[in-house]
Image 1 (tube, one colour):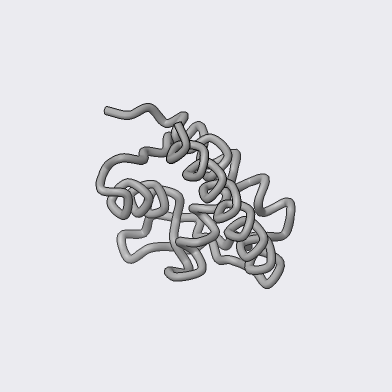
Image 2 (image 1 turned 60 degrees about the horizontal axis):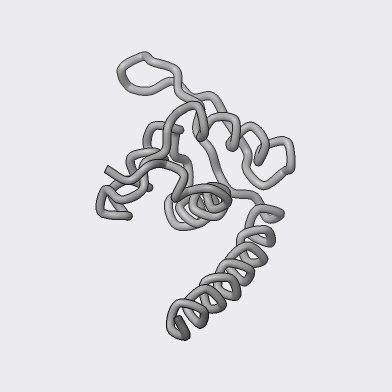
Length: 109
C-alpha cells in the first residue's frame, strides 16, 4: 500500500526505539516489528534496513553480535548502546518538534 518513502529520515529513530524496548533483535525481526507496530503502514526493505544498521553500528549507536540459533542457523542480533540511547533521545526531541510544526501548518491551511 503506502511506499517506504514514508520512512525517509525516520528509520534510525524507529530502529533505535524498537531496540530500546526489545533488545537483541535480528534484522528480519526489526523489519517485522516496524510493520506490525505501525499496523502495516510502514514497511522496511532489506536494502534500506541493513545499510542503516551498518551505519548505526559504525556510529556506535548499536552493537551487533553473531549468534547461532536453536535451528543451527547463524543470525546477527543488534542491541542499542549508551551512545544510541543518547542519539534516540535527541532524535525523538527533533521528531516531536518537526511533527508539531507540521501539525501547526496543517491546521492553519
